[in-house]
Length: 114
Length: 117
Image (tube, rainbow over all chains, first blue to last red; front, side, top):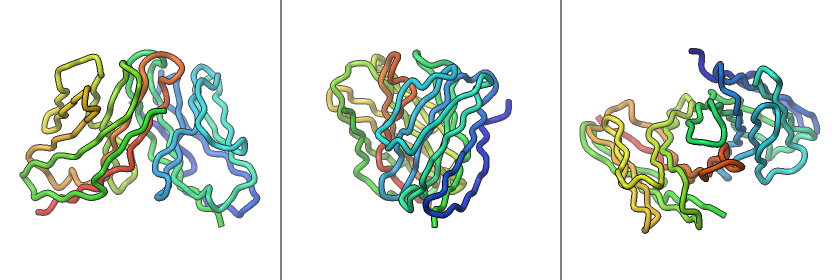
């Protein structure tokens, strides 16, 4: 079974621009979660989608948004990029949401904002 | 709010020896899951081991085992017979049980493990 894939793997953007990151979960997985990893703040939860609905949201400004499609693929969007948005963005997929399950992580997208 | 603390930023171990990574957490919930994840230099996060809070028995996965002390809110990871491939950053993570919080993992700050040949 193919693992979680994230595209692009690396991205360089300029302050003020917007960016869209994509995550394709493992086949059959319906839950996708997004995390931001920075040296200063560590790993922080952004949001979770299950069956095209946002189930949970972390403490991030409204510039961070996401969505999930009917095939469970998910995108996250960051508008009006700031230097502090430079981070590794990880997505994780899981088979079922609501009961015991394990999350499988993708390789991440490294975003650099200049 | 739940918090996870890893007090050891860096640890080192000799190959074939045993090392224990510490993790404490704070929660008012009685049901939850605890995890240890490994993140090698490739940055791919890999699940090492999982513990359900309602289970008294400590989880074990091959060379990896945990010491789960629910009353003390402690969840340490023991790696036996350390191998060079174990070198990575290790994260302790917490997840609430039940719907509504199921996808949200709360991570500790991480412990970088160095394995010396």
